[in-house]
Image 1 (cartoon, rainbow, N blue to C red):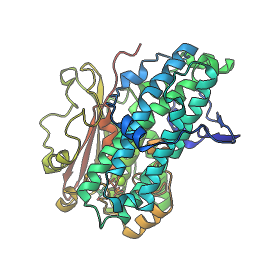
Image 2 (spheres, rainbow, N blue to C red):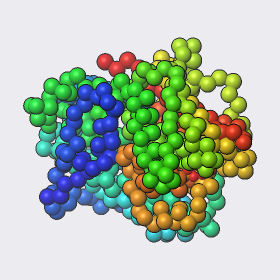
Image 3 (tube, rainbow, N blue to C red):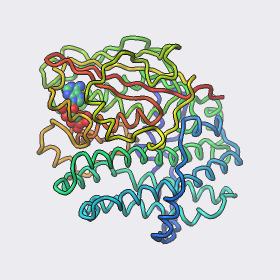
Image 4 (cartoon, rainbow, N blue to C red):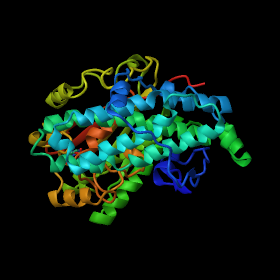
Amino acid sequence: MNRIGIGSRWWRSSCFSGPNTTRRLSATRTLRIPDNGLKKKKVTDGEVARLAGRPLHPLTLADLAKSGRPPLSTEQLLDSANFTLSILPSRLAHRIQSLRNLPFIVVANPNVSKIHNNYVHSLSTLLPYASKEIKTLEEEIQFTSVMADLVQTHSNTISILARGFLEARKYISPNEVTKFLDEHLRARIGTRLIAEQHIALHFSSKPHLDLSEQDSHIDSTYIGVIDTKLKPVDIIRHCEGLVGDICEFKYGVRPSVVIRGEAETTLAHIPMHLEYIITELLKNAFRATIEKGNERHPIEVTIAPTPEESKGKPDGITNYDQGSVDAASASQRPANAASANIRPLDKSTPGVTIRIRDRGGGIPPAAYAKLWEFGFTTFNEQEIVDITSGGTNDGDGLNALSNAGGAENSLAGLGYGLKLGRAYAEYFGGGIRVQSLLGWGTDVYLSLRGVGNIK
Ligand code: ADP
Ligand code: MG
């Protein structure tokens, strides 16, 4: 038997919710994958075309939370498995098609082609289940192993794709790369989330809980990977520690963070996503501050719950000049929520805006214009080569220092951090905006919307 996924860092990370958590879900759980591997069914071109022809199911936090609070009954667990099964095959097929639509010479790149093959592999492990309903716990366990394999198979995607597009940059323009990656990586956020949600629900369901664990789940604030009482300040403090360690190790200095605003604010959101975003934003702020020699000035993080009158707007920022950067990038990004496969959230959804203010000298106009281009970085070129060839585990935000921004022990690198951070924020109706005060520092506004009224 092989054991897969669940004891790994992405799982532990998904369990992080700061010091007040009541969640005690075991970090050492494993799912057994049979020695002869998962059942597979050949993926034909016709099957890909048929599945990709199906409309995509828009995903909301409310969808993910609909199973209700743990512990789940057998029936609720089977419902979750069947819901997951009803949406994943067509999502994977869409990704396969979009990879195949890249210029041939790009798809032929070994790194890009590896990602394509990973998708084909994952679809082949889902197809044996696709035409039937999951009716027994035995089938549900096997299906959860398929989900764990899916998450594991795609854990290195960002660094592999980054390397692929770096190698193929002669054959595809930065605009085309950004357009492709924006869509691809957003879709991937949803696909992984759906798989992770089922895995998390699996372990918080009655049939799969140890008796000793059941009590702790009854008062848990979690529904699968969603923390209904997520406290951003806990994540910020945790990420400050992680990024501070990197700075201390690499540069011998440790900038600090001061928290302002309403530190007690909570919202229902996904801790591993927020952890990913904050890590990337703090890395950028810490790096700029250190490079400017300003590390004695703390990074100021202000937490502002969205006021009543702003609910329904994308964030709590008004009269904010987005400048040409967002305008330019908006034209390259999916034109509206529907094409990004996102459904706008309920208007009553409470939210929070977090401002990260650094004294790192700001962003020069030439860099500002390229800020939202995948692969744009002012980081040292040689280090980028080292990072991409190192095969770091980006984990899609699933391990804390996951690295679209660079290797785990690096402060920057691939030029993906800001863009992916924004993709995570926008996935559920939030956003990221950057305002530079040249010669002084940068303000980054991260807005998040939670999901209201979880029973
Ligand atoms: P990376 O950090 O790997 O370079 P990012 O997407 O996170 O990739 O950022 C891209 C670039 O934007 C950085 O290389 C840097 O030049 C600029 N940048 C981002 N945040 C800041 C900031 N707070 N201060 C100054 N420059 C920044
Ligand atoms: Mg970065």
